[in-house]
Image (cartoon, rainbow over all chains, first blue to last red; front, top):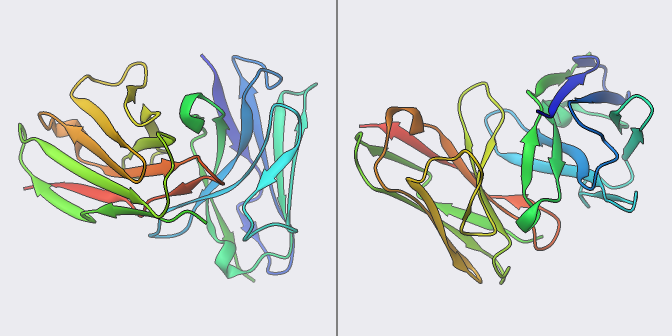
Length: 119
Length: 106
């Protein structure tokens, strides 16, 4: 059974870089899925951040483009997210996700972690 | 961006009720529409993909329909564990989600 486990700092200072790591267990991150990130802003809905496609190219939300780096470490079966120049508006629960299933669905999610941007 | 609008934003229902949630896309998206359930403090889980296909392990009381711009999620007989927030998501162009529909106990 494939599981996703997120890790990383839960408090980030404004203007700094938010970094998250997702470790995939029970399966290979090299499998034919999209691996990426979705966030949920406080008391609000879900916002797609971006993902790496099967070809290895990054697709990201236009509203965040230029600030996002998503990468894969196949040797450690990990996915990473870096979001630069954060502000309080980036405070959210960050989820690691597996996508690319039929209908473009996200069929597997990590547990999610609240990351707070504050000085 | 393709905007997804769900209605209602919330509803109250009793165990055993038939519940219907609608989702409208701002442009045609074929059947590239998925539904998720989220309970407090938990990650969303996939219920329906491709507008009408039931995800493995999801009870058959959940069903989805629609194509183009208008979609529906139906719970045929609401169970206590179904009280949650439901989201639709389009994958036609840069995934976007609806604002959610909260299903509460009446």
